[in-house]
Image (cartoon, one colour):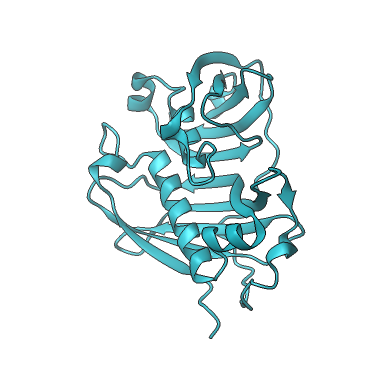
Length: 252
């Protein structure tokens, strides 16, 4: 039997998932995306443990673009939908939609994933798991138009803070979890800024892995806030190389 293409998972938003405004934290939303994608690949027979044991590779998120129509609040029940697209040479595209209890779309996302060799930390070609990939009837439907592209600062980013990374920042791959970076990004804004503004969209490009003990230095460029745009990047303090870059659109 061919598995269903679209996988759905329901979440009741709890206290741990919201901020002081009772709004869903952006990092919690990224966590929902990650959980739902993980459950989907498990159903497809290419889950985390399966590909790790057989091919010594892991699923790693490299780019994601999220657009938010409405931020859900505490005690709301939402449904996260996800579906994969036909694998490319190295990348796997995966889309997401988030619906409220009325079925209305409140957020959409498109993302790119790769297979990372857990021993060499190098990206492997997608066909390494082709024999295990199910015969899906892929759809051309996308959650959003376009694709996540390259990001660069608008002007001169200024340092906001530095963070020493530890155990609580890691995931099953032993490196810093993709959703944790969203918390680091949101910490680049003051509480007053969070009270005044909310995020309408965010693109994050994950460039390089970080591990416990590494020091991440956060920079912010607000030279285009008149256009509702903010650029944020993280730099590895040791080698001064970029770890991630992000662009957010905010309401004013």
